[in-house]
Amino acid sequence: MRRYFLLLAFLVSFAAHAATPPQLLLDVSRFRNEDLAVKGAVVELYATVPGQSLTYKRRAPKVFQAAASVTLEIIREDGTAAYQETITLKPPVLSDTSVSLKNPVSFQKRILLPDGKYTLRGQVRDQYRAGQNNVVEQPLVIESAAKVLSMSDVVLLARAASKSPEQSNFARGGFSLSRAPGGLYGRGADRAFFYTELYNLKPEQTVQLRYRLRQDAATKDALTSTASVQGLAGQSTPVTGMLDLSKLPAGTYKLIVEVRDAKNKVLSSQNARLIRNVTEYAPAGVVAH
Image (cartoon, rainbow, N blue to C red; front, side, top):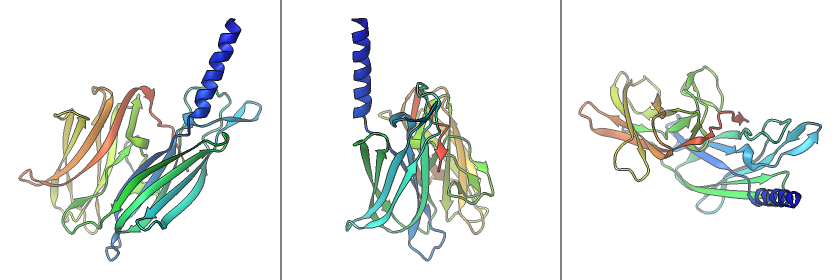
């Protein structure tokens, strides 16, 4: 009888896993096109597939591999594709699939898009589990930055932005950026890091920055912090920041980054969604492709 219950539990667990489609996280950031003669923006797509949601297949003795096929599309209002690409993502090989923590894997792409309204669509397919796929969609609006002071989207980072001369998809404004997929800060990730860019800030002009973190449905900020930044000549002004999450409860928060003048008037602001989860480990081991 005990053997029967163990077999039943295994079958139920296997059926539940087989019925669960692979996950896909899409993070999108919009930055000003440095060619000011072209109306539009630089769009950074960051697609992450959690390793936990994939099937690991035995490829050799003590060698298990997972693979996901991801198709990314940006669709114009008339239904035509402004961008389309399919890539294969493979998390690190495992020697033991009983390990509960499986690294996610990410892919990043930079695209120049003209002003307009689009739909971002991502589809992920588990290559080792037939018939299992997942489609994620979200709206994407591109508007050329105004000539007044403005700000790019806020990018949430898994670790502090580090100065780097590297020229790659994972660097901006002279910094190397390691994104926090889905804005998730899990167990052991007690600090949130972020990056944004200011536009049309005059050289040597100083503005005040205010960072606010507010939990969903709350009426007061859970955490606030301030900083200041000075404009750079002939380029956008990068802004890096950090907030200590160690004393905050788990939940979903809104990070609000505000730019204020000497009279405390808000000149520009942007929001980002942040998730604090104190039970699951953060995917700090993302393998980037």
